[in-house]
Length: 429
Image (cartoon, rainbow, N blue to C red):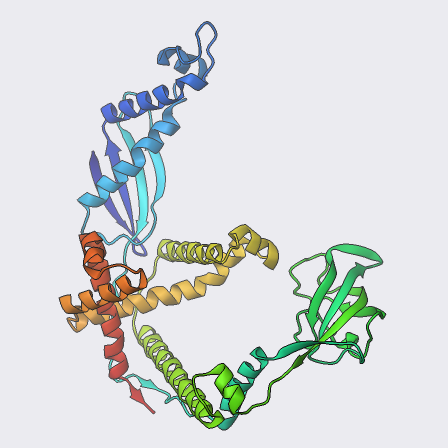
């Protein structure tokens, strides 16, 4: 195999990879052996037709595509091993430039290279000082959330629907007098005031009694995910089947004992305040780091290749799809429920992907500028955290990790230290 590397504009490179004719011939033969049983040639039993006969009947290129698919991954990996000085940060864009029996197989792989970063100011970055004070109103609001969660649901029979009630309803929606898909439901439990349904649907049920049949008039929003309904007026025929209400517990010592480890309301309240302060402090620290890094990105210069950005976006979409799957929802179902397309999701994630790449690149540049390194002790501490998460022994986890994985983890730890370095060096005003 031979390799030529051509540097292109905008941090791109083209690898021209040439595979000897003998290897391509072996790949063609492999493709023939794999597929000969599927090909019919008159006068021969299935799987017994000679390769030359098949190529004469169906064309010399019949096995080329599969042979190319056999060769390209291995040849590309071998090429990467020969150009370790290149930091490739995208999936390759492959193009076959020569494919013919008896000749060398040649293809190109266009890839993005990690861009150089020129740092501007990264020490003494000025940021706004965050207010982490917790007010009595915020404490009361947090306690009221717990109060809502502890509420008892009771059946109501002697009054009409009120705000905050759970109304059990049957409904069917009509646009221009025609029922539309997805607009019908039975025994649906709707919390009045939750704004689960569009427009003023819920408000129009207030004051209605069990057994009432109501016509609810609403208008679908202009940006509604179903284009055939967007912006259109609709009529829902609704029947009230039942009403339930939440009965909130008293805010006393008994409540504190039920929802916490404390005996009195005063102790519980103090604990809620402490936790809110810790939460605000964490949020403020995260916001400060984001602001500092964003300013460093603004002060730096770099040129991110589109292919690098495309690769990051696809990775983020794949991660998102995996999280959906863990929640029991397929990516296709999510697309259907939201009315979005994969292309729209890719475009939505693009700004976040760019921000993620820029942040990583400038912090890696700080690592280099400040000679920041992760220690073996820090690596072991990280492994212990991971082992605890995966319920493994730290020593066994370390044994299972290869050199490349360890190198990546050490790099991540160094970047984390760089983030702390620039945050500690920042000035609050």
